[in-house]
Image (cartoon, rainbow, N blue to C red; front, side, top):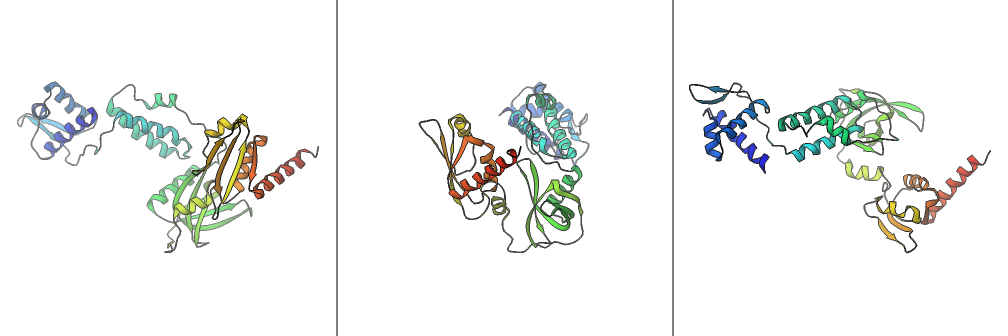
Length: 324
């Protein structure tokens, strides 16, 4: 509440200067029923922290702006909001663009400086919060910057993209539509002029990218981005779904109670300490990798098709290690 009241005083003083009324500490104190000393501190705060270009006019006995284009921030940030932004900086450690992170840190540090609090220091917060990224795909910093810029400017790009399936590079013209960070990898969902449809491109496989003057026209029947990402990312990707039932051993059941594999999952803790998890999926590929990562601690109850795929994969693994 205190920060909002202070902002209200700043805004009142700002508007009166804009109107050429030459307000002073006495006017501010009378308006908000506070001491002249507190009012003067508010004025000094505006000048020193908000960088307001104000000066005192001796003859008018009030303040005025030396630059009429100045505007105070449209919103007052609380300490809690500033800390939340600082947390965002730590979570943004996955962004492979130093310039973006530098701008974000500079913006938040300005907010901290406005508060003039020793407790609000970006360097100190970085000591208290950390994010460790493992198994992530490397992305060229310049490539990331060009793509993000084009995404928000809604401009097409020309790029060379490497396919791991064909082991070949193809030249494409795309219009970036949605950037997604998924399991350590950055992807751009874009309209591809070559395929005349939406495509997902892993940024780590883009060998060259630049803005292009070539026009890209989106068709009217383009599927929604939300629907596209739902079908192409995560264990819920795909169209028609099947109900999966997995049984986890007692040794990992407590851990699995904390896990969310699907927004519609059902979890049942059995008397023997084991745990059953049920949820719908439309594609087995990513789910199979997750199941295998738990080794003998999980068993596929249904469907049989998934259980068979997992069994065959385990047999292939056994063949590799059994060759001696």
